[in-house]
Image (cartoon, rainbow, N blue to C red; front, side):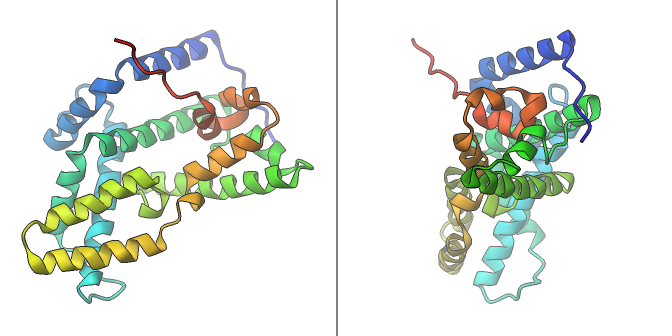
Length: 251
């Protein structure tokens, strides 16, 4: 396997500045992004990132519309109603937490592409993942293989600008399901379909098999957390998973 090219001082500065900007903008990003997604104004965020955000939100909206249609008796290959998809997408875009999470995935994809193009870091099989698969520790090897498969799914979905409902963490799935009911409003028939659709989606959902949970499991098996804090060695997915959560602001 080709060794990644080392980070330059410019790359170090870029990563540090990016993390600093992300922390400082945490409270203000969602309203700005919501405006850009809804109004198609792209002066602040890059076109590629906005396209990915819109694509993923539209994909989640499409899945909700399909689930709703199937709850009403439609078959597996049903084409969702365009107006329903647009309605779900509008509600999802108006939710700051959901929008910020989708934005984060788009930024991760952008980082993965940059590290692969500039430094040869495989976005699926980073050196740390490869070493963990070959480790004598059975738990670590199994966790690494599961994370690899999940990361391959993520990359495939990102290329298609998709976000499968099964890959959402529980809090974001809850937002999606609330959106399903919000769209029904006072329509008794639509409310009934929303209840059936929610039940079906919950039965198929397993948070422990999602990519974020599998990456966290792999990080927890590492003998030294510092191994995952080198993006060239760990790859962007494990690097971002291993980062400590931001400290709460003290006022």
